Amino acid sequence: MRLYKLGIAFLCILNFSSCADFLEEYDPNKIPAETYYETEQDMEMAANGAYAALRGNGYYKNMYLYTDVRSGCTTLQDPGAGGGINYQFFNYTLQTDNSQVKTHWADLYKCITRTNIVLDKIDNISFKDETRKNNLKAEMYFLRALTYYHLVMQFGDVPIVTKELTTKDEIQSLTYRRPKSDVYTLIIEDLNKVVESKLPDNQTGSGIGRVSKAAAYGMLGKVYLSKAADEDFKSERETNLTSAKTNLETVWKMRPFGTLKEISYNDVFDKDAQKNCTEIIFRVMYESGNSSLGSNYAYIFQPTSQTGLTSQKSGTGNNLPTDDMMNSYEEGDLRKNVSCSTASGVNYVKKYTDLDDPNGYGENDWIVLRYADISLMLAEVKMHLNESDAIVYLNYVRERAGLPEYTGTNLRDAILKERKVELAFEGQYWYDLLRLYSKTEMLEVMKEKNPNFSEKDFLLPIPYDENKLNPEGMYQNVGYK
Image (cartoon, rainbow, N blue to C red; front, side, top):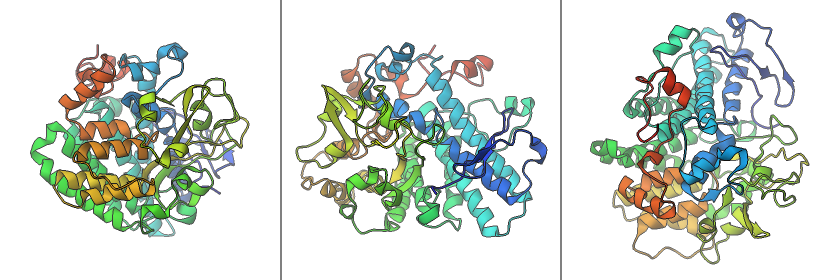
């Protein structure tokens, strides 16, 4: 059995839905909301519902749109498909009524709502084991922090909701954008609660897929790095870099292996081998053979109308590597054949291959955080702090890829390039660009790729409906109409 049961508990004028087992679903819609949360099992199911939200269409299911496509590393085979809505991310022509942006916003807040319900209810419910209760709370703090991280990186200032909302007045009172500084404060506070918990350093066995302390330390490192790179927090840069280093060094010491070369790069992505791959710190898990529980990456990342490359179901041509991405690999890089290939003149992603289910409902997990990411972030932060061992952490990653040690002089660009190929098609590179380039540099680099890129494209637009309902509190991001 894989990870968590799929219990869904989403209030705020939404229906309930949950299940008792990962594959055995039932519908408790007849249970009144006010009496639903009474037992430890109810809380477990509600918490599992928060995990399930990670698989939403607007969350990790389509994360490639908001990151890989937007970074220019991947594209869409048919620009006109779906009315061109998806292609707007690649062509930097996003409109405020883009349905994918709206779904992204809604599904991120759906996850937050579910975590808030658990955190609001759980202290009033008796648990056989108090440690289990506290660990469950810690898991919810992590999921909330992770989700707010995506919100602040994608939209900038956003509403902050930290409690269950049950009335229209409560919802309206919190529907206004809060400064990024407040959002970062909440993220860091939530993650610190996780590292102070009794969660295991790394999850194993039946706990794989759930939150660990390593995940919290890793996210703290990434959050502090992101904040240090944000020009709006220039005065805090050194403090944030130091905090990033402290947390990244902590999680690096938690790794349950020696060096990265001990772990096959292929095993990180092979759907069977990855189940017990110790490099993976946090992931979104899937179960094959079911439209609700399976991932769709194998067939939607397959070229249009082709079958048998990564899925037995006909491909839809999404998230196809650009020629620039394909040419980013050095000669002899062992990662390229695992990551991507070309068929009939069309590039495609191989990391999510699953040929077992004829309907394309795969078991490929979406990896949120792994130790190669940590190693490269350590190289990044140590570079910023002028520490001589920065290159060591870069070379750990290159060594596994079968590449020689880096001997160049532009370490910043070397780290960025290494992240591009090591973490290819994992939804990381857009955030990497935001961290490692200044706004001026990024404008130059991205405009060279596509002249449509402008300063507005650093952020997604606030969805039209949100802005229209409260133009003052939900003010639009600069450059969008």
